[in-house]
Image (cartoon, rainbow, N blue to C red; front, side, top):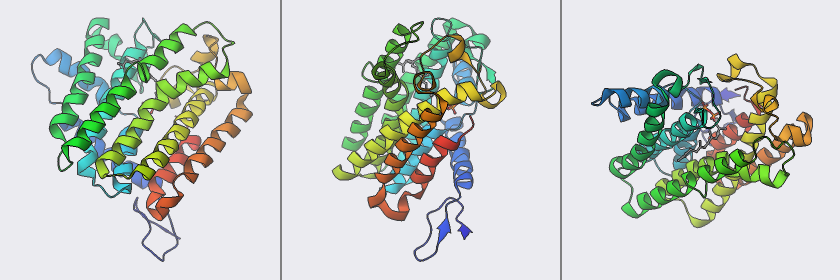
Amino acid sequence: MVATEGRPAPKGESLTFDLSTYLKQRQAQVEAALDRSLPLTYPEKIYEAMRYSLLAGGKRLRPILCLATCELVGGTLEMAMPTACALEMIHTMSLIHDDLPAMDNDDYRRGKLTNHKVYGDDIAILAGDGLLAYAFEYVATQTQNVPAHQVLQVVARLGRAVGAAGLVGGQVVDLESEGNSDIQEETLTFIHTHKTGALLEACVVCGGILGGVTDEEIERLSRYAKNIGLAFQIVDDILDITATQEELGKTAGKDLLAQKATYPSLWGIEASKTKAQQLIDAAKAELELFGEKAQPLLAIADFITTRTH
Ligand code: GRG
């Protein structure tokens, strides 16, 4: 068995896919692209606050999913990189707003003080707004070698994933459910498919659109993404109980303290793990038609259940 440094195995060789090398390589490419995407300019205060959170680390799972899907359907990294950066800008702005005192009121994120703890609530709100607006500008102005109608589809998909039909809607139901520890599984699933799943699905679908996906492929990729999205949140709930603050880079045990309904509180930890694994298996089954080319997305699906932060 030979490790493939992040590339699919050449035909005829029985190879394992080296996810760790692949992720490191892609993370470095994404970090460099994000750094270039947002230069420090006047008024420096807001750009500094935006860069503080955008360049604070994190797994960069969303941009990597977008890049991997674009490559899977025959596109290039260059075609998808502006959208990959935009997805991380959107994700980062949602974290900044989620951490505000009016929402989750968190002091730490990605192992650093949260944006409002460093810059104040007013600048943190504006840094989030600035990142959100810039994400759309960035896709529209920086995407190259992709037909304009495909870029337009990406902009529309991103808008839907972010707004009341996606992240915002999920966050509202989450806020409404606060302090109610016996919410139904249906409500919990609504929260997570919108708050977390919608953006993860957009990463995969937008990567596919940029790479020139077919209708059949897009349906399969969308189902893959929905399944890994829900599994991701179940694992997030489990890690809130089992991982330390150092591992998570944010306060651990918050769900229990807030008596928040979570998958482990509904089903218990072991049943939650089993459910997450079933979702990952279902996600991987959707990729069968892509053959060996799907190795990165298959390995990322497995990473979702084995991750420790
Ligand atoms: C989007 C307009 C707009 C407003 C924001 C606050 C809000 C509305 C939504 C909350 C969205 C949210 C914070 C969902 C949680 C998603 C989640 C599981 C985050 C953790 O993702 P990881 O583990 O983090 O990928 P890293 O740091 O690795 O990127």
